[in-house]
Image 1 (cartoon, rainbow, N blue to C red):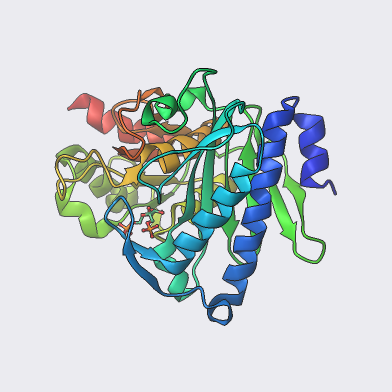
Image 2 (image 1 turned 90 degrees about the vertical axis):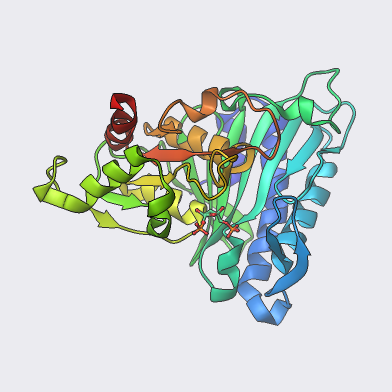
Length: 324
Ligand code: AFP
């Protein structure tokens, strides 16, 4: 079994990126430890404040954000960082060459019920003259990402990572405090009979999405000709991890609850890093109209519609939108 650092040193020739990932994991191990202690660590419940998205912050959202920020700020190659929990990006080291974007604790509304949550991250190159305290430095399309990954805090703590050359997963061995290589070159099955979507929003979706999901529900009697099973954890990290493990399609499509927003999920902290992982594993990642990683962002907290997972099923979902 290989330790994360040994794997990175042999697999990735960019030492700055290796240092960033390695450093980030220090904060993630701390988050994992606090999550495992739960109420004993006093981390459950609300922080009684809202983040920039207007969402209620959990105590651990705030703690995880601070832990990751502190960790990244101490890594010389990090020029700046942007967090889902922070309104503005933060400049770190003037000579740094990379920008790190992260969702410190995705799915945090699940913490109090002891359900899987995760940290998602994305690494971008920084322009030498870029102002890391301004949004503009970070507004790069997802296909510019140098690396992306997530840490899943579940029955075991896992790191799933890509540096642009396949997807690898590591399990945290808490006895020795090391992430150990678990799966190499993960591939997502091309076909699936499992979908994940919040069905309670059905009436707000576009007619195309309503028709597609309607046909999924018709099973073998409908035009898709097979029976589908549904899963919804409400924690994107857990959902994408299931898809990387046994295939599936995950959707958080555009809906009319807030018509001015293209979706609920955030492009820079959820859409892009998860798209890079899914595509690196042979899956598809789209808004149902365009490839997520081709979107040129216009704001660091921009939202996006998401349809990702098994390649053939994503194509089927897209075809409903194209034909109309
Ligand atoms: P929280 O971090 O606020 O719990 O949101 C999680 C999330 O961004 C994503 O992980 C889930 O897929 C999605 O939102 C769940 O949203 P619903 O509230 O519609 O179930």
